Amino acid sequence: MNKWHRFILMTLLALALVAPTLGLSSGPPWDTSDTPPNQVITSGCTCHGGGVASKAVIVSISGVPQSYTVGETYNFTISLTTSDDAVEGGFLLWSYGVGTFNSDADGIRANANESTAISQSKVGNDWLVQWTAPGQDVGEVSFQLVGNAVDGSGLPDEGDAWNIVSFFIAAPGTATVSEGDELFLRTISVGDYESLFVAEVTAEEIEAEHQEELSAKYFDQGNLYYWSTFAILLIGAVFQREFYEKKYGGGPPHLDRSLALPQGIGRGVAALVMLYLTIYMYQHGWGNGWVGVVAMLFLWAAYGVYRTILQGKTPPEVLDLL
Image (cartoon, rainbow, N blue to C red; front, top):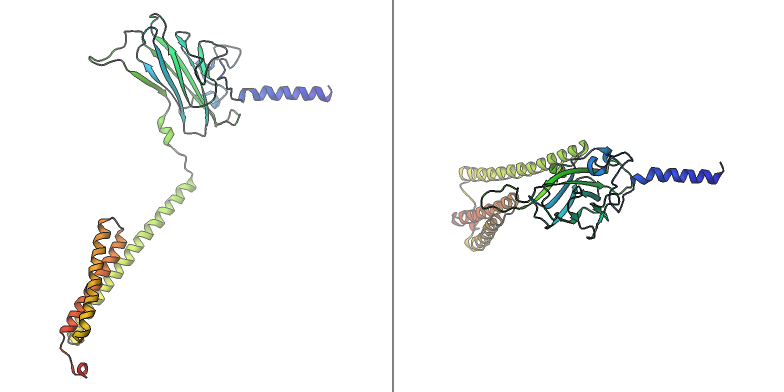
């Protein structure tokens, strides 16, 4: 065997191995082997997802009537949803040869091996399908729908998954409805919707989130305790000063009224401004920390007005008159 024969043989072997893994723009194949009933439409997609249906793939079809009207055309919408990394999808729908599908619709084509079944002509996750009911009452009509979602890697790996759903449309006039109700269109689906909202979280991510919560908690509580302690110490110091000043000093020192008047007016204006800001910030949802700081400034300014009044009323002493 010369080198060209070897090259051709290896190429054919590689194509034989790769071919099943490639996505088909003409839709999923009808058979997965030469031995029926190993068919995709009844057994699912054996070349993806380990040959097992996955609840993580939500396959749904909407616009399905409870019972069909002879000769009526219905618009079905086929949708694929998954929480995995799958970005492309395809489907295969069969009514067991009853009624007819419009295979000329955009993105739809008849299956190459079964003309009464349809699949997608381009990958996606949402398709509009038209099905026309048979021209006479043939009893209930059964349907089989397979949807697969792949990650586009070209390999049948863990990024690919599929699901399958069977349903039927009742014969004309056989659907049971309550008095006064009308037949309505249904949405039929298979899969676990909760899986769409479940994200895998590693132990490192859990620990990082825990540490972040702890740091935020200590930061908030640390600020709260710091400013609360500071306010308590400040108020305590003011009361201590007032007590010792009256008991041992006879009261606050004298302040001439020519000085007390402008000082009192200035401190009074500052107190009013701080009071206004405190009320404004509280009503507009500012944080408790900011409101508390401005409130403390208001109290400090108000205390200054009080001290100025006391000093202005204090009788002058000899040293004050010199």
